Image (cartoon, rainbow, N blue to C red):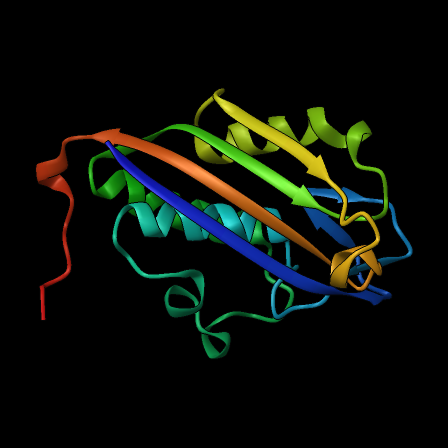
Length: 164
């Protein structure tokens, strides 16, 4: 079994869609980034890449190799291909999205469905927290996410990087 954890944060910017866990959420601002800036999927991808020892999202998909506005769902499918190629599968994933606004509870089911489809497991959890008025999230300047994944499979098939 392999465990990975991920974190991401992006600033809010007017005129962009707000995409979280692969779901577009109506709001007056979206997240700024080179892709659709879906912090939930970015945290999940970092967790997946960490669990297989394949670096992080920035090293796997550098800015110069990513088409502007690319869907994070598209990138997640690519990362899942790497997970499968190493003989592993997702046992479960737990995601926490931290946003002061908008209220996200009404989008939980859609996010759960999106994550289940992308990660090929029904064992998904999505939780929502606020910044309680503190920091970048609390001032509604950005949105953050945390993710933990558990992978299982034949450990012998995991390609480990060489030890320096």
